[in-house]
Length: 397
Image (cartoon, rainbow, N blue to C red; front, side, top):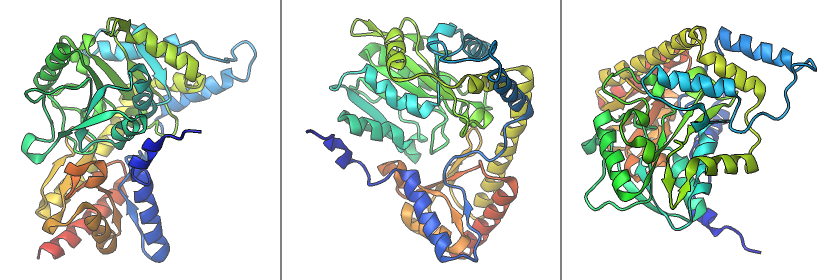
């Protein structure tokens, strides 16, 4: 028997599992202290009323023979695919419902999309970035190149002269740095990919946080992207579906590589290995995109944006360099006093009882940086901000 030895090339555990276990160990050793967790990017507000109403109605349908649903249609129910196409259309992007494939979330699709590509491709992954990009390619044994995302380039790597890669991951707004590409910057990537016959895998999971009109919310806002890009998105952050699980992937009908069209390949892959998101969840997701649903989720997004502002003000008052928090729910702060990321993790836990995510867990370029999330409760966020500001002021003083 042969075992996939590439697993030996991975870190011993997934980043957020390590953060969780270390925070739990501290809490167990200090039972009298309240630990505030601002590490994993999980939402805290409940699903809004219009979405819950749709979920309840769908559950009731499942209780009656004439409205019961079993296996759903390939690619997702038409009502949801059409609603997603309408969501894009309101932003000036034309998609056919058949180009939209519903799933249980962007994370699984980002990993599973690799089934469409051969083993000998070279993959370009930004550093730092969401660990799933790198880990899934390491598991598959792919050759991986790293694109350095640093303070000097605004954490937005661009195509370098002579760059040669077959697959490129882009995440905008970026997790963890909060940086977001302009349409002009994405146009450079699109031109490069079409010239090099490469494919861009574009993670737009946080597009709902973009407020700056100069920034792109979809790569398909850029001319030429339909011939080189696949886009992933999710209801997790826009509507709080981290526990409900629903996302989608957009594969343009005309996207072709190696003489094969990728949209039917993806459909074939999904129908073979996946049975689709539950009917009741898809009904809830469709409710997100109604006028009532969109109005409700804007209140939740405003709540998280306020949290980001509270954190930003605390960091600024403490004299800490940070990025993000404006068009993103994440703040990317520079560790004080030249501390390493895990060193600062321990220091912050000890001096403020606040948990964040060490930057180097997202890649080599994350060393000396630290990610905070705005997805916590407002009271806890304000308390964490005050604790951090006091601890950092004492450290700097």
